[in-house]
Length: 126
Ligand SMILES: [Zn+2]
Image 1 (spheres, rainbow, N blue to C red):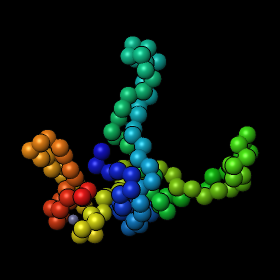
Image 2 (tube, rainbow, N blue to C red; image 1 turned 90 degrees about the horizontal axis):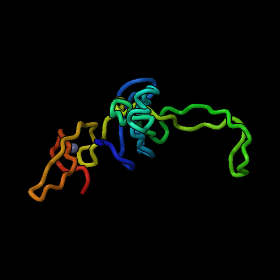
Image 3 (tube, helix red, strand yellow; image 1 turned 90 degrees about the vertical axis):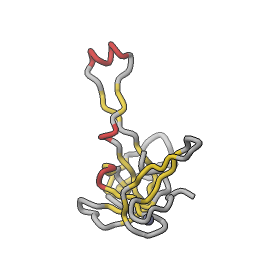
Image 4 (cartoon, rainbow, N blue to C red; image 1 turned 120 degrees about the horizontal axis):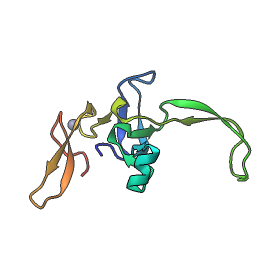
């Protein structure tokens, strides 16, 4: 995954284009299988990177009508919360050059990998 929880991202398309926020959750995409395929493979969904989504703080706010549930901690009424957006609609903001950038994977001699900013060439995680 090129984006992780805790990253700062910038939205590049849609109503919230230009907004920045911290990634609160990364949702790995799953594609449901047809019933016959599901039976054959023994599971109901397969991993699909095209469906990866992220929840970004303060971005893509929706009003949700929350019904009363058994849990008394649940807030009831209309609550505002972030809805997931597709991962292709955001770009990682490099902590070094402060620009929205694409990510390159740098592979070290010991086989470990780290994300690198394509604009300034510095490592994102360090
Ligand atoms: Zn950079």
